[in-house]
Amino acid sequence: MKNIMFIAPPAAGKGTQADMIVEKYNIPHISTGDILRDIANEDSEMGNYVSEVLSSGGLVKDEITNQLVEQRLSKADCKNGFIIDGFPRNIDQAKIYDNILNKLGYDIGYVFLINIDEKELKKRITGRRICENCKAIYNINNENNIPKIDSTCDICGGRLYQRKDDNIEAFQNRYKLYMEKTKPIIDHYKELGVLYEIDGNHDVKGVFNQIDSIISGDDRT
Image: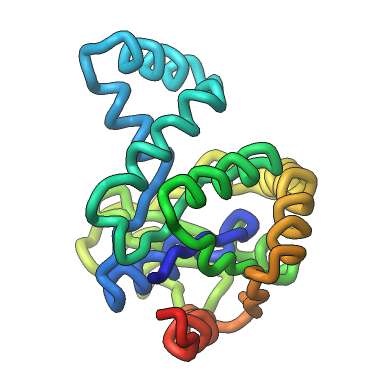
């Protein structure tokens, strides 16, 4: 069984790593954000509530998020493992998540902590450019990922743009919040002996190889 959780700061590339693991191991990538957006489209009391909260930019009550996560993890496609994304966000949710897994008869599995230098994160954040058409991602601060033509996508020729929150001030706020919220979670899973630290300063393949060597080399899989 390959139950996987990532803990990583903004722009550390956990989404890319999750996609690569999904492709190799054929397990579902479960995003609480996606779950909530799907629920928000339902014509039900909960759907209306979630839709209203998301539209206002608020946070859905923990008890509802917990319930939805448990429902999703109980589905058949999770029996051989899954990647959990966007949950838990604080130590209270981490303990609830552990209880959910125990109730379902699942192991915690692997908690991968992607460590990366703050300076490198700033370069990734401020240099990130996204194609408005095909959503391809470039980085003008990385010579291996600069578009051939300035502000133009190599793939489809679409215009590249910078997200409004991809700036130093926004990054510093997000990074500070990440450090405050995740340290207790990191300590919790380290104490349980399921935390694996990954050097995120390597390229995408180098980071994946570290993660994959742990998964493929573990007799639990």
